[in-house]
Amino acid sequence: MSEIKVNSIKGVGASAAAITVNNTDGTCTANLRTRSNKNLLINGEALVHQRGDASVAVGDGNYLVDRFRFANNGTLTGTGAQDSTVPDIANSSYFAKSMKVTSTGTTAASSAGDYAAITTRLERNDVANLGWGTSNAQTVTLSFYVRSSKTGIFSAYLIGGDGFNRTFTFEYTIASANTWQKIEKTITGDTGGTWTYSSANTIGLGVSFVLENLGSGAGTTSTLNSWAAGNNYAGSSNQVNLFDTNGATFYITGIQLEVGSVATDFEHRSFGQELALCQRYYFQLVDDNTQFIGIGHSFSSSEIDVGIPFQTAMRAAPSLVQTSGGNYFGVLGGGDSTAYVDGNWTIFAPTEYGCFLYATPDATITAGNTKLIRSTNASARLAFNAEL
Amino acid sequence: MAIYKLNQHSTETEPSSVTLTDGSGVVLCIPFDETNADYQEYLKWKAIDGNEPEAAD
Image 1 (cartoon, rainbow over the protein chains, first blue to last red):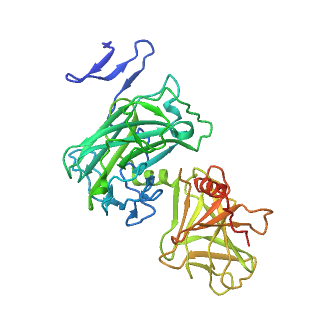
Image 2 (tube, rainbow over the protein chains, first blue to last red):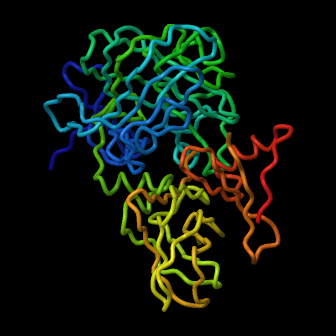
Image 3 (cartoon, rainbow over the protein chains, first blue to last red):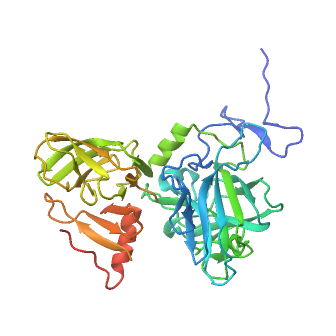
């Protein structure tokens, strides 16, 4: 039997070791390109789009796809959407979807503090292991594929810490118009600031991709490649303005944030896995006609109740999101003629695991009976929102 | 303009949620939960002088 004793294994032309061996405890660390559960971000390849909007305006809080929304201040005009334009990559990192932003106006640099970005947020639960705010802060690497009709300097930033006031901003250059390129940025963990993780399900970290950064207001920084305090939004002052050209486009996909100093291959999760992860923050129950909501109970002759168990434990007790109208939700069976919800549902006793909904039917129903509750209009929509 | 209205079920002694109707066609029903982001927005709105939600039915 033979034995090889080494400190590390490194490629012939590599600058870093692929495998580093601990000399005393029998363990090693490796820069595996395909390890699982490495991407801290959810829906980085834009697969899941529960809200289903064909497009949304570039407006604060509007979601392009699950987990990725606009952060915006100012008067620019544009749209965001899930798109099928993807990078052409001849390996396992093929992508099916991307996010697309299109300028629909010509907003020139005008107002200090105007900004626009695509942003996603992580729970403190999921970033506590980074050890940021301590001397053991972990290094992370952010990678993504991007394409724009505009060339020049773009920027992205991480934001977190107590008060959401620790930021790390970096620039990247889009050299060729309408050409996909991969951006990789290694970020040293923040050893400063205060990162408290006791409120485990609240905001832990934000990752933003800047689209516009006008003037010199609160949305602009010239501090690059290091952690800084005091910026709520922190695009580079050199940032290209996507929205000064009508029809200008910006695409992004394959977004990955991982521990370590190497950008490894994108971690493709199954659609089911990705959907379940998204449903912790947003759970779409109804988005069409004739969809089952639940088995209800006529609490009284003028109130229908229904219990809703969530598909996965949500981050927090969620809000109910609904699109309702005349005859959108049917109350069937129980010996009565079909009735419909009059007005809106109200959420009751929600937890992260489920809730009750109650509403007033548009006709008297027999108290104490079991009812089938379902959508009765193609525009009916019920969802639960626990986004950060 | 956003309009908030309190909700109180017949079994409750005080409101436990608020409904937001902002004219977009989408209606939000927001529980009083400190970790709910919509509830935090409601608290910001309510903290502005003069802003009061409609009373529950």
